[in-house]
Image (cartoon, rainbow, N blue to C red):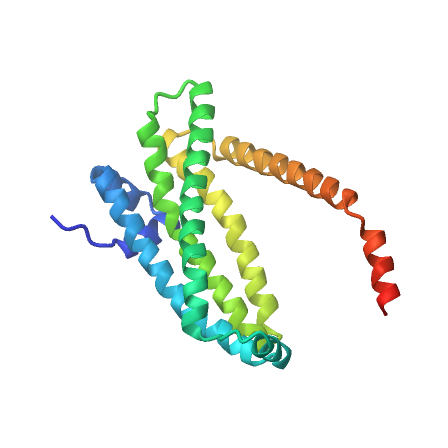
Length: 226
């Protein structure tokens, strides 16, 4: 039997509807989750296609970029922009799903430390249903690019993106709470702690790389050229 894209159910699950999540549990299978990811990816690709026209419009608004592309005989069009973004979009979506799996694994380990009887399959499946958030983030990003010509809207969409990121982190923890019955705070604290550790490691790595760059020499060379 063909599996249709349960877009309304996924949206309700992302908003915290427990009944819809349990309904999906009853139909849970590897084939079903792959089909859901496939339709989610197609939705994302469609948004990527629409965003290519937004990026092209922003490109036309900057004469310096047009002069640069003309100087190097680079042809820019909505289709070429879409072709460039498409593989990036697919790879990013796959990485997003892998990230959801890693978070599931993290929460699974924490739940086992709390003497939970949850299985790995039950831990992974509900988190994968939150893949729809990738589309949410993509849609808000497109609206941000679209609002560059209206200065008042850009900070509003930026704020919405920030709120969505916070809600996404909360929803990850809350979803696992709905599955295991453990406190949401436990998973939320664990996730924030891991995010902080990763951010600190990346920050230290970037700082180390930047400190090793001969920026002063480059600056001096640039001043000599001027």
